[in-house]
Length: 544
Image (cartoon, rainbow, N blue to C red; front, side, top):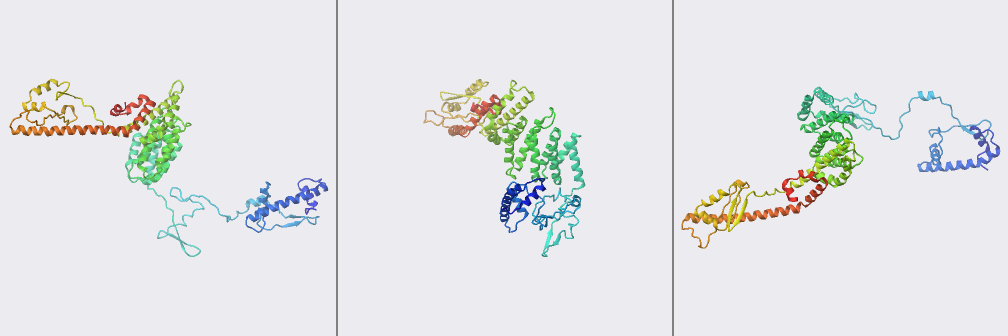
C-alpha cells in the first residue's frame, strides 16, 4: 500500500492534460511515484549533509535533481516558509499558495541590495594619471587635499586612516604642443626636412621625459593600425631610434611597450601594400635597432635577449611563415652578433638551404616575386654566415708576410739580391775596405730590423780566430772586431727566437682553431665560392 493516494495521481494527470486516466493505472503508478520521491529525498539529504547543515532546503532538492539529470524546479527558494492551502473537495490534498505576479510590477520594482557574497570586480583606478569618475572610485571632492596634503578618516574603532590622493599627470602647454607637432609630422610626413629636424630634436633635447609614455602609446597604436603604410612604419621606427639615442630620457620602464612594435616591424608578414615599398630596408633598420636595444639594456633586463632570440628562432624555423618573415628573423639574429649566428643559425643552415633551394630555381619557382624573396633570404644567410666565419678567423694573430727579397748562401758568403739592384750590390762589395771584406769572409749572422724591403739592414761579422787572420795591432780594429762578434751572436739569438715564436704560433693556431677550419669547410660546401670574400687572405692561404 503506497503512501501516495491514487487521487493525487489523478489530479497531477489532469494538470498535465490527461483527463481519462483509469483508476487502475493511477493505483499502479502510486508505488512508483513513492519510490522516486524517496530516491530524490535521499539524495537531497546527502547534499544537506555534505553542506554541513541540519536543515533541508530547496537548494538541496535541486542538487538531487541535477544528480539524476532532471531539470530542477524553478520558483522555489529557501528564503521563507512555504504556505500550503487545502484543496477544495479533497481532505488530504494541499498546494502552495502562489499569487500571480505582474511583469510590470517586477520591472518597476527597485533593485535589491548588493549581495553579501564575496566577489571580485575590476575597474580603472586611473587612466594616464587621471582618475575616472565611476562609482567604484571615490569622488574627487571627497578626496580634496587638506591643508597638510593628507586626508584622514576615522574607522569604527577610532583609529585614523590615511587616504592617498590620486596623482594627475600634468603636462605643460609647451610639451603638449610639442607632442602634437611631432605626431602630426610623423603621420602626415608633409615636410621631410622638418621631420628630420624633429627626429634630431627627439634625440638631443632634454626635458622630454614626461612625453615618453605618450610616445610609446602613440607608436604602439600606429604600428598596430598602419601595417599597410610603409612610410609611416619607417617614420615610427626612426622615432624609436631617436628616443633611444636621447641620453636625457630614462626609457627602460617603457621597453615592454616598445619591443612588440619593434619586433612587429621586423618579422611581420607584410609591411606596406605596394610592390615598390622597400620593406627590406625597414627590416634591416629594425634589426640594427633591436641589436642596439639588447646591447644597451641587456644587463638591466636579463631575459630580454633570450626572449627575443626565442621569438626570432621560432619565426626562422617555422615553415608556415613567409620568406619575408624568415628574412627579418635572420637579419635580427645576425645583428645580435656572430655568437648568436653560430649557436642558432648555423646548426639549422643545411636543412634550411635544402628547403630553400627549390624556391631559388627558375625551373621550379615560376613566380618572380617569390624567387626574388628567396634570393634575398639566401643573401641574408650568406652574409650572416660570412660575418660569423670572419669573426672566427680574425682572432688569429697576424700571420707574417713572406720576405720579397731572396737570400743566397754559398761558401759561407751571404749575397743580398734584389731584382733591380744586383749590379749595384756587387759594386758596393768591391768598394768595401779591407777590414770589412775580411769580416765578410767568415761565418755571418743576419739581423732584419725592419719589415720594409727597402730598409732591410744586413750586419755581418766574424768571430776572433786563433791567429790565422792578422787584423793588425790597431786598437780601433780590435774594438770593431769585438763589436762585430757581439752583433753576430745577438743576430743568431734573435733569429732562433723568431723561428721558435713562429713555430709556437702556428701550433697554437692549428690547436685552438681547428673548429674554425671545419666550419670553413662546411660553409664552403654549402655556399661554394660565395663564402670566400668573407675570408681574409692570410687565413685563406692557411686553410686552403
